[in-house]
Length: 330
Image 1 (cartoon, rainbow, N blue to C red):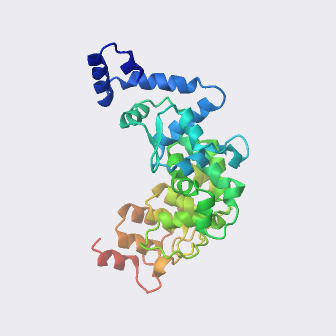
Image 2: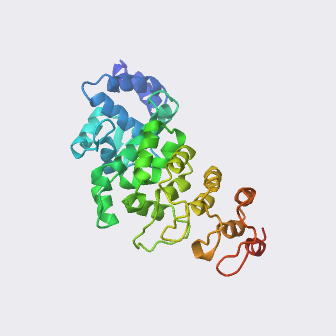
Image 3: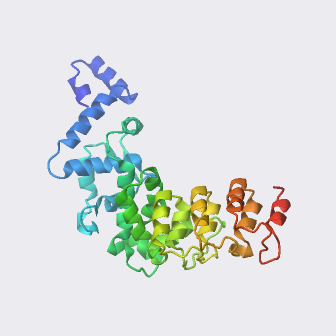
């Protein structure tokens, strides 16, 4: 707007407006506005940049209630603090017009997303920062406290769903010691966390969801889904999780790793002395028979090469893995 007002005649003003509408010459404007955001007094600068980080780097558009709770996390203090949650008016003021509120929180223009995406040094380690914020939120006492039902948990903790669905996405791109520490804390006793129910609902492979209470989704099941090797190694070293534990659907962590194609975690699990890869799991299958039926050749090789998987093991119906592979034409 300053560029338009600075023009002295109507023709020049129209030219400046046309360039602005076409996204031309906006980099200087964005540079200037970011400098102004950084120069704000008090905590406004930090808050403004945090908002831009979340809005430009999030895995899906955030609702304003979710964004406010994400901004309410204090990584150096007590985690999520309700009194630390900024008003949406404060959020808009601190971003100096670069963020708008529609059904979700958005950047002012697509060219701003391109500008921020092309500038990797604008935010310092954004992926690990976002992962740590998600995990810290999930570990906060108010979020981790037992809830009567999932709907109540989501209403009281608006950031719960996003943090559950995407902490692993952010962490997989940049694992730090802080992220690992917070992840281990979350995954200890994970089966009683509302996050376990959300994970099962959002990442199910069985094609339906009846809404029944979900139990026994352990931290090892969770990391087998995410496939983050650094965290999986730390968990296995602690030996706190049951390698052969069944979730409420009857699947082991090994089955989760196989189902989601996380080969490195499959290897790690098979290296453990007390793993039972031939245990009968979901739908009466063995892990190998399920993989043979799906045609995942890489997973079949991994299971057989470790030497402790019986290729002729029978499932509850008396069928060997070869039967399932042949039936599916693999």
